[in-house]
Amino acid sequence: MIQIIQAIILGIIQGVTEYVPISSSAHLVIVPWLFGWTAPALTSLSFDVALHLGTLVAVLWFFWPVWVRLVRAGVASIVERKIGADPDRRLAWLIVIACIPGAIFGGLGESRIEMLFHQPGTPVRPGAMIAMAVIIALLGALLFLAERLAQHTRGLQRLSLKDAILIGLAQAAAIFPGVSRSGATITTGLALGLERPTAAEFSFLLSAPIIAGAGGKSLLDVLSGLKTGAIVRSDLILFVVGFVAAAISGYLCIKFLMDYLQRHTTNIFVYYRWALAVVVIVVALTRF
Image 1 (tube, rainbow, N blue to C red):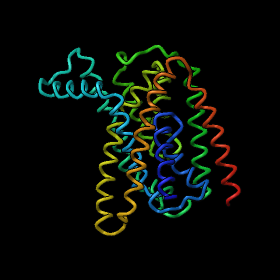
Image 2: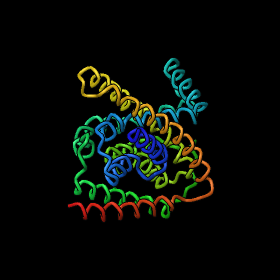
Image 3: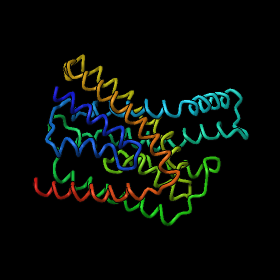
Image 4: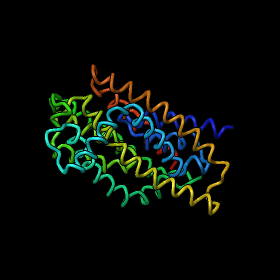
């Protein structure tokens, strides 16, 4: 029962932090590390990705009308072999192009990240936690600069191919816990002059194909683990409750952030990142 409660807590944390630019992957490492949660199922990469699938459901759910338009437009562009002046066709292909860097870097770097932060039942080393804290703080500094040095006046219709490629490259850096997929893409969007809600919306739409790809691979790993006995069937309930908690909290978080950025800056997330980095470094130094 305790592990089920922990799975629900981690699911809520994933849903809240996936789309807010404060790094969900970092929080999924930090919370078990701080409280000594070492259950192999809860500290595995498979559980991590199960939670990400929950947030995938959230972004598909929230933007469902947009996804329907984009899929129809993308299929039509392939059938007719042209994009033309249709903004939905253009946006659909910009998302596809922007996903390429993340797919490549994710496939190449996932195993190394797993070795550092996702060894089931094994506490993360203090040195790795300090490195992650530095990344958290640095991304906060970049977000701080993007808020202040750029004019946020460009809407989604003015998103260019160059913008999409740069934001896609930024998403690729999110394989490192602490960077944050939404943090990297929203920061880059703001630095390129996008309006805050526009930067957030493109970030959220861009996350879906990458999460879906990683989630599909993870599901195959889970099925393989069940066949070999590496994953106990009784642990699947932890994946399910975490998935549901992440989906519900992720949907509510997207709704909150899209409303929040209409009237506010991202400063609160910058300050949170810096405070979190300090806490992690202090605790890590006491555990050497």
